[in-house]
Image 1 (cartoon, one colour):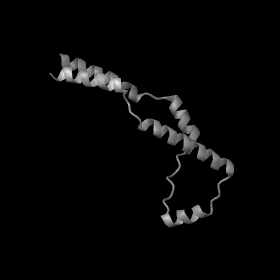
Image 2 (cartoon, one colour):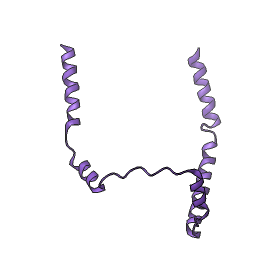
Image 3 (cartoon, rainbow, N blue to C red):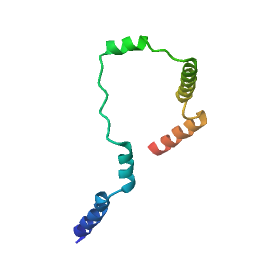
Image 4 (tube, rainbow, N blue to C red):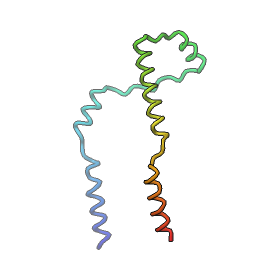
Length: 99
């Protein structure tokens, strides 16, 4: 009898998967047809194009600011996660529970 209940619960749980979601369908219709994946190019072609690209001063400054912010964030993440007192408390608790 319990197995029958589980089967019923499972069937009821799967029913929403058959439902229509107008919001999702409308969003997909607004996007139009999905575009194809971009063509893969040889590395030499990309490097040749990179030499001819110029970056404006505004974009360059924005990128430099972002790079600096990411480096500061990385420096903060390299630091210790626990303070010395937290580490000591954790080690003491682990030692108590290991006995």
